[in-house]
Image (cartoon, rainbow, N blue to C red; front, side, top):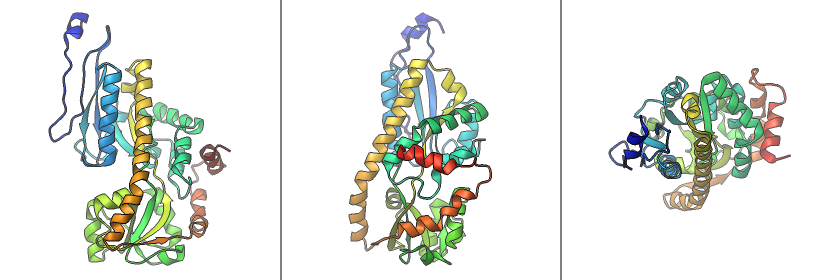
Length: 337
């Protein structure tokens, strides 16, 4: 494309429609081709992460004067998370919402450690760990081995708690409980020593599974429980905070390298800022959600966190592919000690 043609491109919006396409501007600098990146998420348009990424995309497009534009595809329009990761790995211009556990399957098994039980104590530690030199080294390995570039995985939507037909204050209370557990290795190895009957149910089917007694317990962050309305068939919520999932956005390394250094810096900066904003939003909503749930008849219970931490400690010795001392390194990066 020649300079005359480039300079004649006018700013245009592609917001709207069922895909919720993000605002885009194409006023590229001289000698630079505009890049359009497809943002993929399995979450619905109303999900906080999707609403937030739309804002992030708009800021990036504005700051890059249209050199980077976006199209947003929520609700799994481009396939599953695994599908989108594969497409990004193959060099397609895709940014997808994912978690460390998914990325660990692309040749960097160490990444899954950050989604182990009780690996961080709060979101401040999570932010420090996500942006640490230790994690950046793993991000670089992922880019080299799988062609996937991490933009930010500090999009915390709150600690995950257990909801069911009874309180689970002690880990022994879970023995024999039919718990909905996603078929993900980190989940399975966390709940195995708690002696639950791990039951795989698709997220969209958990409400009916709880209603019909197919499962009697599930786990999710408060924001997720509100969106899914699992608190309607299950009235006891135990504040275990067992996981703080490291979720966020990754993209094709090939597409990332096609962008100028200046614009790549803007891309990473804004996605990390979006993560901080989402984390704050989730924390602000927690008290509000608790009041809503209690008004709907949900009883909240505290958990013996020390007992849970001890019961799940074996998790960190169950991955032979992890290097020795990985847990200690991660905790040091999280706490700054």
